Length: 140
Figure 1 (cartoon, rainbow, N blue to C red):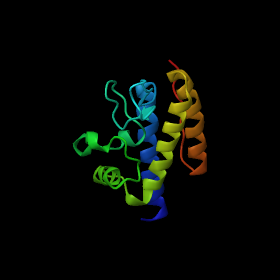
Figure 2 (figure 1 turned 120 degrees about the horizontal axis):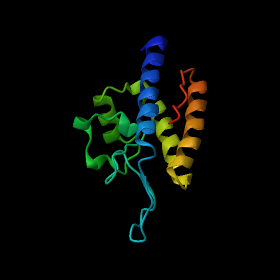
Figure 3 (figure 1 turned 90 degrees about the horizontal axis):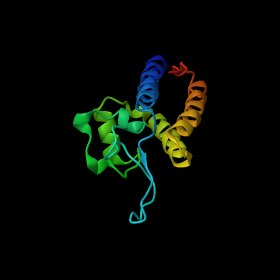
């Protein structure tokens, strides 16, 4: 893959994640209950809210399975779902970075608003790092 094509595809991935998470208004995350030994969790598809994580926005419905939950982006089954959904193998490490931004900010934010503020700042830095276009969020 040449650099121009890779940058164009990375921009498309970035825009999909950025706009998807903005539209849903918060992370795909659930605090744990006392009965859940695994602790807080991020989800590719949230079990009770219409939300997706960064990588979840890139996995097409026909390639999603609840069996993906709990697996990291670099897990073979998650990789396969992302690649089947059109994410180039060469950009999976970037998707993993975007997922890390989502997960880190979701676990540290007390509210959706706090998540979005911190997440936007990290997404802006990601865009700068990889020479991507970043559009600021529309204020409602």
